[in-house]
Amino acid sequence: MAKIRKISSIENGVAEVIKILSEDEIEEAIGKGVSFLRKCSDPDQPQQIDHNDSIKLDLACIKKKKAPPLLNSHEYIMSSNFTNIDQHNDDDLDAVLVKFTILHGKLVEVIKKAQDPKSDKGEEISAIEKKEIFDSIKSIENKIMKLKISIDKKN
Image 1 (cartoon, one colour):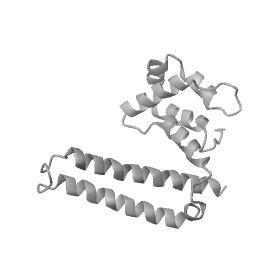
Image 2: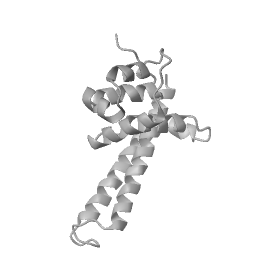
Image 3: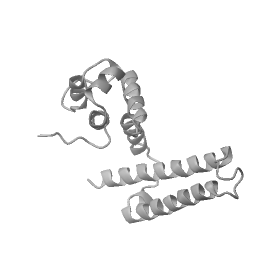
Image 4: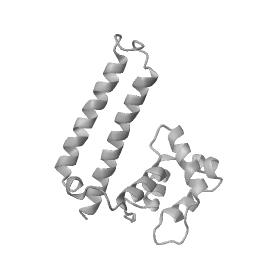
């Protein structure tokens, strides 16, 4: 039976890597087999992944156009340990989802505006427009992180 891993764990990030990358891709990235990663993904085992290996695995995932699971795990662990997070706002899942929807709408608006033929560089996206798009994406990523923390605290 599959083990349930805490969302806020490196072991969960390693388990996600195993889902994304093939055995050959894992071997190519870190020079170790998938059995090594399975041990690292087991919270009951003493085996832990090396930081350099985690970076290489995340880069391999990015090459496949997938989010970097180990970086996301690190970010989640860091965010969930901040004591100054505005708890009363983040605990209300409905409010977080509404804010997420608003941010998504803003991202769509920024992208459409940047692709408008009447924008700075026409249909080509300018450096300023790229920055606005990346800022909108970062806002959504931050909201997703807060959503994950809020859901995790419900357990």
